[in-house]
Image (cartoon, rainbow, N blue to C red; front, side):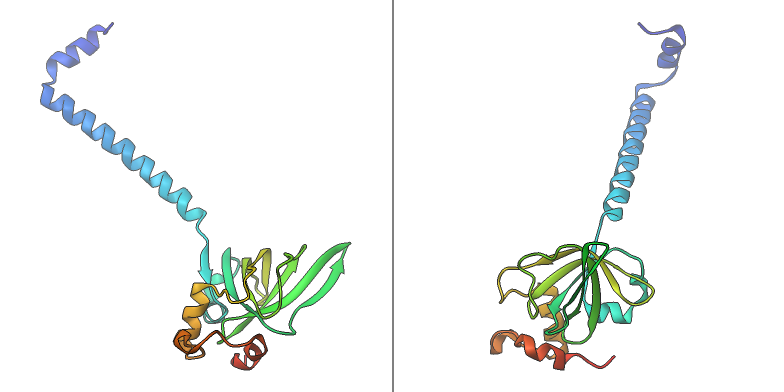
Length: 176
Protein backbone atom coordinates (compact mmCIF):
# COMPACT_ATOMS: atom_id res chain seq x y z
CA UNK A 1 0.00 0.00 0.00
CA UNK A 2 1.46 3.38 -1.05
CA UNK A 3 1.55 6.34 1.32
CA UNK A 4 0.03 9.66 0.29
CA UNK A 5 3.49 11.24 -0.26
CA UNK A 6 4.45 8.37 -2.62
CA UNK A 7 1.21 8.81 -4.52
CA UNK A 8 1.79 12.57 -4.85
CA UNK A 9 5.36 11.94 -6.07
CA UNK A 10 4.10 9.41 -8.60
CA UNK A 11 1.51 11.87 -9.89
CA UNK A 12 3.98 14.75 -10.07
CA UNK A 13 6.78 12.88 -11.93
CA UNK A 14 6.19 11.91 -15.53
CA UNK A 15 6.91 8.29 -16.51
CA UNK A 16 9.98 9.40 -18.47
CA UNK A 17 11.61 10.85 -15.30
CA UNK A 18 10.74 7.78 -13.21
CA UNK A 19 12.46 5.54 -15.80
CA UNK A 20 15.48 7.87 -15.79
CA UNK A 21 15.74 7.69 -11.99
CA UNK A 22 15.59 3.89 -12.10
CA UNK A 23 18.22 3.78 -14.84
CA UNK A 24 20.55 6.05 -12.85
CA UNK A 25 20.09 3.91 -9.71
CA UNK A 26 20.81 0.71 -11.64
CA UNK A 27 23.93 2.17 -13.28
CA UNK A 28 25.15 3.52 -9.95
CA UNK A 29 24.76 0.15 -8.22
CA UNK A 30 26.43 -1.62 -11.14
CA UNK A 31 29.37 0.81 -11.02
CA UNK A 32 29.83 0.28 -7.28
CA UNK A 33 29.74 -3.51 -7.77
CA UNK A 34 32.34 -3.39 -10.55
CA UNK A 35 34.57 -1.11 -8.46
CA UNK A 36 34.59 -3.52 -5.50
CA UNK A 37 35.09 -6.54 -7.76
CA UNK A 38 38.14 -4.97 -9.43
CA UNK A 39 39.54 -3.84 -6.09
CA UNK A 40 39.35 -7.34 -4.61
CA UNK A 41 40.67 -8.92 -7.81
CA UNK A 42 43.71 -6.63 -8.03
CA UNK A 43 44.52 -7.15 -4.34
CA UNK A 44 44.76 -10.92 -4.91
CA UNK A 45 46.73 -10.69 -8.15
CA UNK A 46 50.27 -12.14 -8.01
CA UNK A 47 52.70 -11.09 -10.69
CA UNK A 48 55.15 -13.53 -12.26
CA UNK A 49 58.72 -12.32 -12.48
CA UNK A 50 62.19 -13.62 -13.27
CA UNK A 51 65.46 -13.12 -11.35
CA UNK A 52 66.72 -10.58 -13.91
CA UNK A 53 63.54 -8.50 -13.47
CA UNK A 54 63.97 -8.61 -9.69
CA UNK A 55 67.56 -7.40 -10.05
CA UNK A 56 66.61 -4.38 -12.17
CA UNK A 57 63.49 -3.17 -10.33
CA UNK A 58 63.36 -2.08 -6.71
CA UNK A 59 59.54 -1.96 -6.84
CA UNK A 60 59.39 -5.64 -5.88
CA UNK A 61 60.70 -5.12 -2.32
CA UNK A 62 58.15 -6.47 0.20
CA UNK A 63 55.63 -7.12 -2.59
CA UNK A 64 54.17 -10.63 -2.98
CA UNK A 65 55.23 -12.13 -6.34
CA UNK A 66 55.79 -15.46 -8.06
CA UNK A 67 59.42 -16.00 -9.07
CA UNK A 68 60.22 -18.59 -11.70
CA UNK A 69 63.42 -20.06 -13.01
CA UNK A 70 65.85 -22.93 -12.81
CA UNK A 71 67.53 -23.99 -9.58
CA UNK A 72 71.28 -23.39 -9.94
CA UNK A 73 73.36 -26.57 -9.62
CA UNK A 74 75.20 -26.98 -6.29
CA UNK A 75 73.42 -23.99 -4.72
CA UNK A 76 70.97 -25.83 -2.42
CA UNK A 77 71.93 -25.65 1.25
CA UNK A 78 69.86 -27.07 4.08
CA UNK A 79 69.74 -26.48 7.79
CA UNK A 80 67.45 -26.49 10.78
CA UNK A 81 66.17 -23.77 13.08
CA UNK A 82 63.96 -24.51 16.09
CA UNK A 83 63.34 -28.05 14.80
CA UNK A 84 62.10 -26.72 11.46
CA UNK A 85 63.94 -27.29 8.18
CA UNK A 86 65.32 -24.23 6.39
CA UNK A 87 66.66 -24.05 2.86
CA UNK A 88 68.75 -21.65 0.75
CA UNK A 89 69.15 -22.00 -2.98
CA UNK A 90 69.66 -19.85 -6.07
CA UNK A 91 67.22 -19.52 -8.96
CA UNK A 92 68.30 -18.21 -12.35
CA UNK A 93 66.81 -17.29 -15.71
CA UNK A 94 70.19 -17.35 -17.44
CA UNK A 95 70.83 -13.63 -17.01
CA UNK A 96 70.78 -13.19 -13.24
CA UNK A 97 70.35 -15.31 -10.16
CA UNK A 98 68.35 -14.73 -7.00
CA UNK A 99 68.97 -16.24 -3.56
CA UNK A 100 65.88 -17.87 -2.07
CA UNK A 101 65.25 -18.55 1.63
CA UNK A 102 62.52 -21.02 2.54
CA UNK A 103 61.53 -22.35 5.96
CA UNK A 104 59.54 -25.53 5.58
CA UNK A 105 59.49 -28.90 3.93
CA UNK A 106 60.58 -28.92 0.30
CA UNK A 107 58.43 -30.71 -2.30
CA UNK A 108 59.58 -34.25 -3.09
CA UNK A 109 60.13 -33.25 -6.71
CA UNK A 110 62.50 -30.35 -5.92
CA UNK A 111 65.89 -30.85 -7.61
CA UNK A 112 68.83 -28.70 -8.58
CA UNK A 113 68.88 -27.91 -12.27
CA UNK A 114 65.10 -28.14 -12.65
CA UNK A 115 62.37 -25.54 -12.97
CA UNK A 116 60.77 -24.09 -9.90
CA UNK A 117 58.15 -21.45 -9.11
CA UNK A 118 58.50 -19.74 -5.74
CA UNK A 119 55.86 -17.57 -4.06
CA UNK A 120 57.09 -14.91 -1.65
CA UNK A 121 58.63 -11.47 -1.42
CA UNK A 122 62.00 -9.78 -1.80
CA UNK A 123 63.26 -8.31 1.47
CA UNK A 124 65.49 -5.26 1.92
CA UNK A 125 68.61 -7.51 2.12
CA UNK A 126 67.92 -8.69 -1.48
CA UNK A 127 66.94 -12.18 -0.30
CA UNK A 128 63.72 -13.65 -1.62
CA UNK A 129 61.77 -15.04 1.35
CA UNK A 130 59.55 -17.82 0.05
CA UNK A 131 56.22 -18.80 1.54
CA UNK A 132 55.72 -21.66 -0.93
CA UNK A 133 57.92 -23.64 -3.33
CA UNK A 134 56.37 -25.40 -6.34
CA UNK A 135 58.40 -27.94 -8.32
CA UNK A 136 57.55 -29.67 -11.58
CA UNK A 137 58.01 -33.39 -12.14
CA UNK A 138 59.21 -33.25 -15.74
CA UNK A 139 62.90 -32.43 -16.12
CA UNK A 140 62.26 -30.93 -19.55
CA UNK A 141 59.63 -28.48 -18.26
CA UNK A 142 60.53 -24.82 -18.23
CA UNK A 143 58.11 -22.02 -17.27
CA UNK A 144 57.11 -20.08 -20.41
CA UNK A 145 58.36 -16.81 -18.91
CA UNK A 146 61.79 -18.31 -18.22
CA UNK A 147 61.98 -19.78 -21.73
CA UNK A 148 61.09 -16.36 -23.13
CA UNK A 149 63.76 -14.65 -21.01
CA UNK A 150 66.38 -17.16 -22.20
CA UNK A 151 65.38 -16.65 -25.81
CA UNK A 152 65.52 -12.85 -25.48
CA UNK A 153 68.95 -12.99 -23.87
CA UNK A 154 70.28 -15.23 -26.63
CA UNK A 155 71.16 -18.01 -24.15
CA UNK A 156 68.84 -20.60 -25.70
CA UNK A 157 66.87 -21.11 -28.90
CA UNK A 158 64.32 -23.96 -28.85
CA UNK A 159 64.84 -24.55 -32.58
CA UNK A 160 68.31 -25.91 -31.78
CA UNK A 161 67.39 -28.44 -29.12
CA UNK A 162 66.58 -28.76 -25.47
CA UNK A 163 67.52 -26.17 -22.84
CA UNK A 164 71.07 -26.05 -21.48
CA UNK A 165 72.16 -28.70 -18.99
CA UNK A 166 71.88 -27.76 -15.30
CA UNK A 167 75.68 -27.65 -14.96
CA UNK A 168 75.80 -24.82 -17.51
CA UNK A 169 73.37 -22.56 -15.61
CA UNK A 170 76.05 -21.30 -13.25
CA UNK A 171 78.29 -20.25 -16.14
CA UNK A 172 75.41 -18.46 -17.87
CA UNK A 173 74.78 -16.04 -15.02
CA UNK A 174 76.20 -12.56 -15.35
CA UNK A 175 78.43 -11.50 -12.47
CA UNK A 176 76.60 -9.55 -9.77
